[in-house]
Image (cartoon, rainbow, N blue to C red; front, side):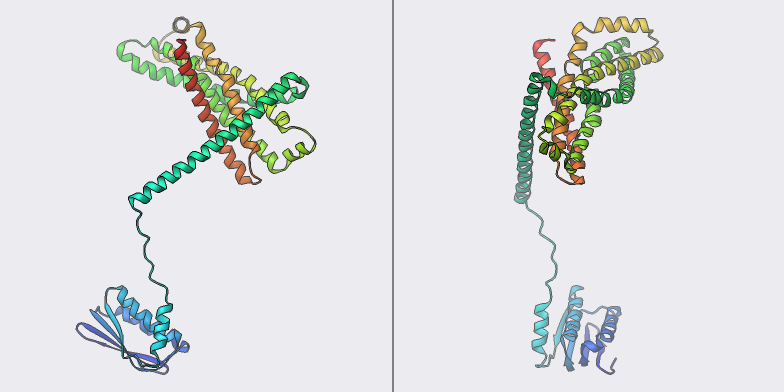
Length: 381
């Protein structure tokens, strides 16, 4: 492989491979030398490799790097490689290039048990403090809303009736189709599953009792609140968030108007007045679906269904469910408006706040429903 510029010769024995390097190993011939060095990869494997620089006449930084890279490549394959007979004039350059090479990348060490436990505790601590900070902000906003509500009762002209009616139409009337459809299907599914289990004991008629108690006390109002939280609560956050990004909320404050009175109270009163009516409608649609299923699957006529339903429920059963609706509505409205007014000035923040609004609303609705269940159990009603 000798020629003009740099050259190399290969002598392969049984166990050792000798690479004789000579000539001018300079940047001008680096491409040719690199091509010839690549042929070493196709040779038979050897246990040791010796790179002999005895015939080397000229060497620059690129040539030294090629020699060192060849040696490192053999070492990376587990072959004992060495550089021999280095001319004294070129030894400092090889040492300098060797020191300047980046170290071999090493995989990061696996974390120990202590590190894992510490990271887990740190995560739990950060999330706990974030939760407490969010709860504090929500409680403070709830206090502002309570003050605004008291002020509205004292000065009724501060409450805009047209805005309240508009919010009732958007949160109530527009939600009738989806609430009615889902409640109707829930009534069908609950009755069918209950009858299927009770059929083993010949007590299919008690599926009516299961439907009446489950829907009127819990499922009707809870399902309605979850639908409204996902539909109207997210809309509140998105609307107020977009207004905050567009600086419309700041414009209201500049005009001397309170955003709580203008933006929050109409949505709060509209939802509080609407959700009990939606819950009543959901109860009716769920019972209608259950009655249809008992007639089709069990052969129970409507008059017998109504008679069994009347015997199963008490006069308080319906009101215990509807009583929760205003509390659910106030929670959804406060959380949705608070998230909307606290967004940052970016579209990403609006989307993130909308998601958090729905999650927090549903979580708080379920917590409040559990609290009511415990209260009713303690009062034996």
